[in-house]
View 1 (cartoon, rainbow, N blue to C red):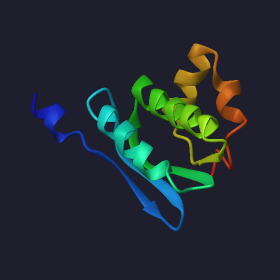
View 2: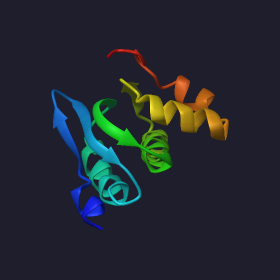
View 3: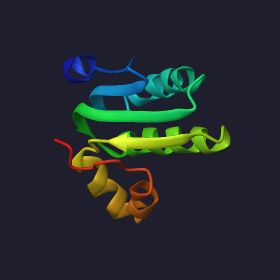
View 4: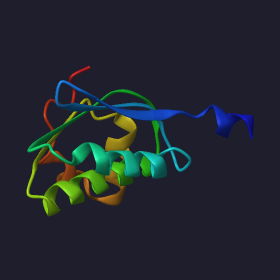
Length: 110
């Protein structure tokens, strides 16, 4: 119970790049999805940097897929940087790693 309350994650816009930080989990991702919608408005090209993600599960993958879906609906270009290993593993397990590969920019930029 105290573990759940200590889970934190946030999105911030720095130099036209959405920085994702913290733990991407079932507890944190719903709020991040709402934040992402707001940050995506007004951007022609969307860059998402995940270098500061400390942990993730399938909820983190769901967040990225929602960002991809929103970008496609708005006809925007999207690039992901520093995709966490955990998200790659989950995407591979679900057989959708190829979907994300087309949006990756320097996956191993660590």
